[in-house]
Image 1 (cartoon, rainbow, N blue to C red):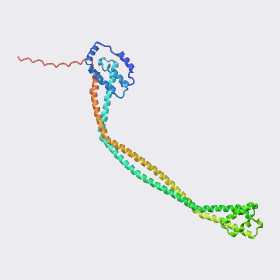
Image 2 (cartoon, rainbow, N blue to C red):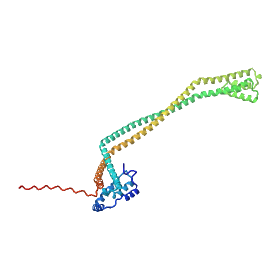
Image 3 (cartoon, helix red, strand yellow):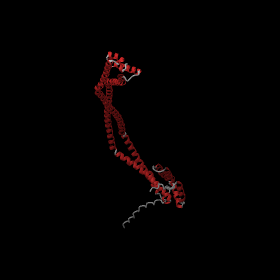
Image 4 (cartoon, rainbow, N blue to C red):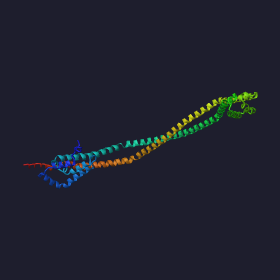
Amino acid sequence: SSHLGSNSPLPAQRSQERDAMAPKKRPAAAAAGAEAKKRGTGLAKKLSSVSKVVKSADGYPKSVLAMLTEQMDCSLGVCKEERHEFQVRIVEMIHEVVTSVEAGLQAHIDAAEQKVSEADGIKASRETAVEAAAAAVAAKTEALTAAQAAATAASAEQKEASKAVTAAKSEQKAGNGALELAEAKKAKLEDIMANSWAPLQSGELAEPAKVKEAVAAIGKIAKEFSFDAAMTTSLPSALNKKKEDRGPFDVIVLDQVDEALKKALAAQVETLAQGEPDKVAREEKVKAAEATLATKVAADEAAAEALKKAQEELKAAEVDQKAKNKELKSFGPEMKNVKAELEEAKEALEELRAGALADFKELSERSIHPPEPEAPAEEAAPVEAAA
């Protein structure tokens, strides 16, 4: 498991461990220190090289990286034989960090190289997407044209249906006018005959005021329905007499009026009966026109909604086409940047390996014992001179 996990020492604990575990100076260490002073500039440069890489690492808490750089001189800067356990752990942590930086650069290089290797396929894919987007715009434009035509037709049909309803209602009103008049006359005749004529004819009305009112009502009806003038003139005299006082002429006048009233009522009934089929036909025509209008209104609303949807879809297709064209246009600059970044990453990785990683390796393996000098090549024994 990683040394940089949750079990890593806290700064205060590390300080205590460092103080407790720090080795005592020994004569050999003092000698090594003197030697280190001679190489001080080189050592400091290598430690600085590793420190910069540690500070730049991603994926670690800043506090951990700060601790590692803080402890670098007294851990990685110490020869391996003189490192105590805490210092060894610090060196291992530093190793983990710098190798993670190397792995990150390598991963970036691998990804960039893969993208470069797939460049032809990516470009072809974007070109296909541009063609598909153009086809979609063409199709949506055609669909919008059709939707506009359908909406125009639906609107015109709705207007015509509305006119048809108006015409049917006008026809109904005109045709029903005569029937409504006949219905009103019929109702008036029935009322007069029941409430005025019958009581007067039978002599049931005796109160002078009521008799006068009933006589006036019948006289009005007689004029309205154009009863015989002589009969109408003689009618008030006959009606104002008591039944028993009426003479033969009065009886004849009353019989003629009774017949005229019944004839007028029958005429209204006949008018209504003859006009009923046409009345029903006109009513059905209005209902049919209203039903057609309702259908056309629904169709017009649906066509308007379809037109709105077609407009929205065309707009979306045009936005998508613009985006696809932009993606294709940006392909060249994108690949140029990818290649430039790839070269930079390769140079950075090469520099890292030749610099900080090599410095780390050298520092981590540095020993207090100088390397043994190579043995000189044995000289060949001289050949004895011939006797």
